[in-house]
Length: 228
Image 1 (cartoon, rainbow, N blue to C red):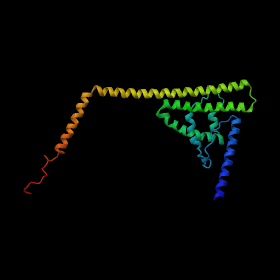
Image 2: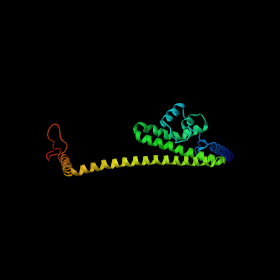
Image 3: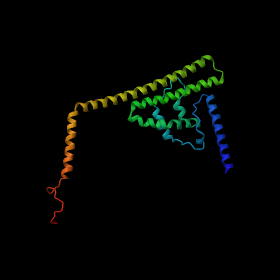
Image 4: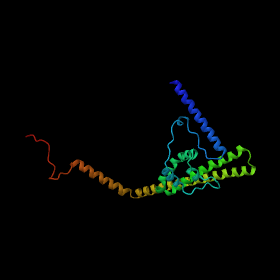
């Protein structure tokens, strides 16, 4: 039993080593790379998406704008490669969430869609800069362009997050205004509402004292007389 467990651990380590080498090679080529999964997830087969599911989720992205990046996100995700499949699985939960928002809350949907794309744009700009610095063959002008591209991507992401914060603040203010108006209305009719509530309570007390009404006349005295 111990030998079997040790052999499984060696197999897992070999798979992780191969995965790390694949990530490094992809970085050198400027390809999108997702974070390494935790060790306890290596032996779990990833859930694959059907062609129909992938098409439906990709439609949520709409028009993809990653700034001046030449990286074609939709084309990359549409490919049938291990790298694109992994990235698609990683994005699938957020794309499903966006699917639900598209009809229910179009304003929030658009901002969260932009936030997702800005995050991908930042990651790609960072990988592009790493690739240029790793090879050591890029000119200073190319490196400066890459640094500026990363800075611009971060700026786009910052602006999207600011828009999301402003929307959340506006909606919180609208809720506060509605509650304040409701409270002002209640306070303006304070005496009337107190009297209405008082009358309801008195009516309830009267019903409890007199007992429930009877359809066939007044309630009968259920107490036994001394002659019974």
